[in-house]
Amino acid sequence: MNEKKKKKTVIICICVIAAILIVAGFMFFIWFQNKQLHEPHFIEIQVELDDFDQDNSSRIPIEVKGKDLDNKEVNEVKYMSSKDGGFALCKGEYSLSFPASPLCKNGSIYACPGNTCDLKVEESLKAGEKCVVLAEQKFTYTKKNCLEVSDEEINVAYEYAKSDKNCPINADECKEATVKVRDDAVTAEKERIAKEEEEKRKAEEAAKNKVNSEDAAIKLAIEYYVGKGKTYGGDGYGAEVMGHNNGAYYVHLYYSKGPNYPDWNLADVIVYSDGRVEDNSEMSFRY
Image 1 (cartoon, rainbow, N blue to C red):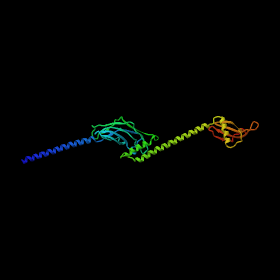
Image 2 (image 1 turned 180 degrees about the vertical axis):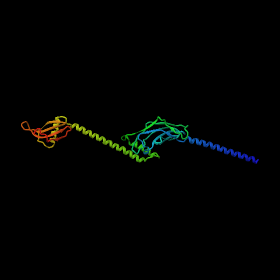
Image 3 (image 1 turned 30 degrees about the vertical axis):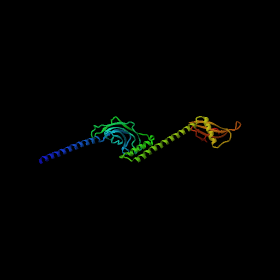
Image 4 (image 1 turned 90 degrees about the horizontal axis):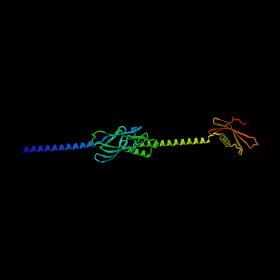
């Protein structure tokens, strides 16, 4: 009888152990399957940036919103390197958007893609299998003209770079460089505009003073002579154009007190088409 009890006890123990192993195995299988279901998958996405150096720039922020496999709300920012071409994400349904430009050591700021992307990371994906965003769907960042970059754009790019724990660059130094590049460009543009306006003003002034008739040449010649302080009183100044060659008028100046008095020869001058007047001692038309 004791022998039978012993056998029975042994059988019971074996059954209990077997049951425990089966339950444990089943639990492990469930755990392992659940773990695989919640393993992140690499999301491959096509992002284009002109003249972009990832080694000297922050990573690209991507805003992810949606629900995961457990129907939990997801609202987070993922960061991707242009070299890797993607980022990790668990199974679920999401919407991707591009909230900010990367921050660059050379001071570049990019206009973000305006399009968004709806993404479904399928439950059927196997562990390690990547999810590829449709090849025809590209997201293009366009480098902005420095003159068009606002403080807000720089600050937003800085905040995202600062929030990236694995940011490959110093966000503070990059922000300073970006502000300097933008401010230098604005200063240079203001100087260019001011120079153009001054050149335009000078051209208009020159056009206004341009001498293109004998009357204008005589007027300038008299004003020039009187301006030197050589006045005799009254309005008896006279002038005569003695010649005209290559835009220059040769003018003889004289003073007359009236018809009963001889003319006083005063000076000979050259009046140029651009309004300049100079003495011409070589002239002797009326001497």
